[in-house]
Amino acid sequence: MTRVAAIDCGTNSIRLLIADLGDDGTAQDVVRRMEIVRLGYGVDRTGRLDDAALDRTFAACDAYAAQISEYGAERLRFVATSATRDASNAADFAAGVQERLGVAPDVASGAEEAALSFAGAARDLPDVDQPVLVIDLGGGSTELIVGRDGRAEGALSLDVGSVRMTERHLRDDPPTLGEIESCAADVDAALDGVELELGAVRTVVGVAGTITTVAAAALDLAEYDSERIHHARLSVSRVRQVGAQILAATVEQRRSWPYMHPGRADVIGGGALVLDRVLERTGVAEMIVSEHDILDGIAWSLL
Image 1 (cartoon, rainbow, N blue to C red):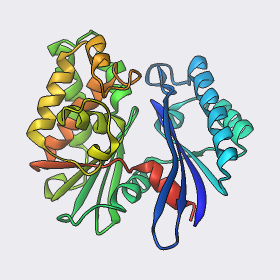
Image 2: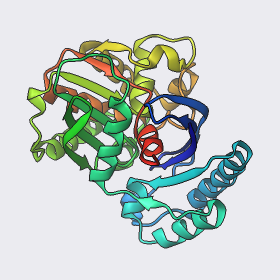
Image 3: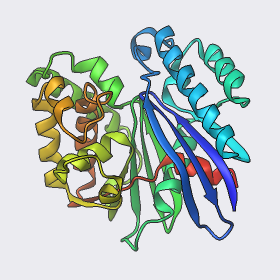
Image 4: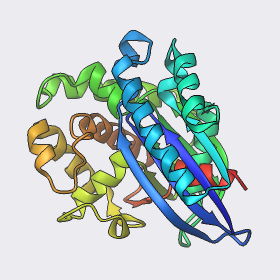
């Protein structure tokens, strides 16, 4: 077994996985944690990383560095996604990560994000109809990956995510009908340019925090429960119903829901809309939800 540490730094959250991985494909989590740092706050508008957001992210890096040292990970990879692709001051971010963790962040392209996400989500899927579409819905971007039998065959990254869509369109609390329609039209315009044959997929797998939180709502959980969410099968009609409920609620109401991370409550409406529009294009009746995603793909890439 090899003990590795993987960090996924996205637009909304930064996550750490320390895991023991075997050459035979077995995996055992040692630490899995998340901090909402909103690194991508304002990037869509200003083109730079906010100073306070950098401070929050670096504080999380300090905490992660302590745990990586404590648990003796042999290898470490830090992957930075959408927010740092778009930022003019990305060099400041990279220097801060290097100082705290001793590695430079890999600023993944959209295609690499997609490949890592598919690798993480598809590794432990039960037997499912092929081809498979993995939807990795982040804060700044959404990756769509189509593959068969655990191997990605086509992928793309769209600049539509929960934070980006909320900041761009959903300014009222709760959003107005006009704002919702404007946001949906923006997502639809991005999907119109998609060359993947979304209507041909037989299985859809949704990953990342927006989708797992929507799953918690669809399952009516009394608290966030990863074991019940992982590989849950949800009807698309139920997912879309929950999305409408999220958009109709105020941020304060969303924060009161027992499975909702408080740092996600103000942007999950934008994410729910992205998910709704993607599912509409697939025509499937059911979605599988996975707790394994790009973070797991980063970990396995270290072997």
